[in-house]
Length: 369
Ligand SMILES: Cc1cc2nc3c(=O)[nH]c(=O)nc-3n(C[C@H](O)[C@H](O)[C@H](O)COP(=O)(O)O)c2cc1C
Image 1 (cartoon, rainbow, N blue to C red):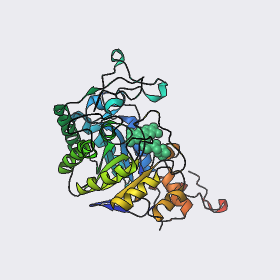
Image 2: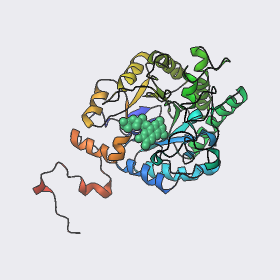
Image 3: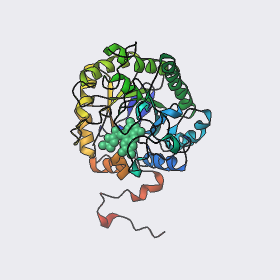
Image 4: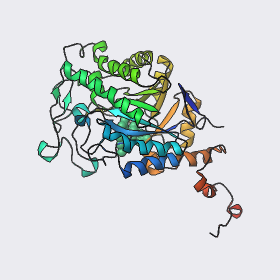
């Protein structure tokens, strides 16, 4: 058996393999509600063999949406359409995760395919974003309103309520989004956090909000189910958030009952130069895994089956998250099993007669139906 298709047990959840659909915003919801697009998009990836399907950044409050078309989970009405999706995913033998998110100063932006950069104006359905400090992401983004301590307490409570609703919707993994320059990352990074109260300044103060969110979510998320946190390991700029801080933060998150750190990078500094290339973020997952002694997920330009298998075999990460490659090919896991020669991976019964890729053509049965 390959490592890629070895089950991964986190608490009492046994994922059937090490392949996860990385959260990907679809910018296709109205009022935060999941719809047929989300069902088919996510459902297809479960049919394709991913063991864990993580739903896109789902806003814990309306003003925490990256765009007006983001998914949300700020009301009970959001639960049932999500439940339909988790039910379908589990029927395929996979599990559903949800990324709980607040975009902070990077909220209220356009659907990316419109080609418009920056904030959606109030007159066109946008809203004034919030953040740790009144510093805009870049000149095209609105200057956020600074959260006061009452607002911060409300943000923590919104993550808790969102986790409770996620459980009701059938999710087995909750992931707190603290990466990519969104609200919780904005608190971590000295570039976006210039506060002078208990939530800004020193390392301990900048990580305080994320630790409070993780602790509060852990209290309502069942003991037997895993909690993930996505971090950006570095801002990729001088004087920004850095990998040493990530390792220390990961240690503390582990101490609070976080089971896996999903290690990404970037997103806070608009001018960062990111050395994008195959597996460019895996080094950070490896470091966190080794030095913080916590399970890690790795993401970022992982496209090949042997590349994923190599990452696992060399102990760099426990879980492989794929984003764009799974958009190109929802059946990537089935093809990977084929390529790696792992015969233990079942094709969906409905598709089993198509599982002949490596069979000599003369042996492929002709099906006259
Ligand atoms: C369409 C799209 C939407 C994305 N939305 C999210 C998101 O909601 N949350 C998140 O943490 N990352 C998001 N990402 C980043 C991916 O999860 C992933 O980290 C990144 O694309 C690198 O992985 P890849 O090289 O496999 O695509 C998104 C990426 C894409 C392409």
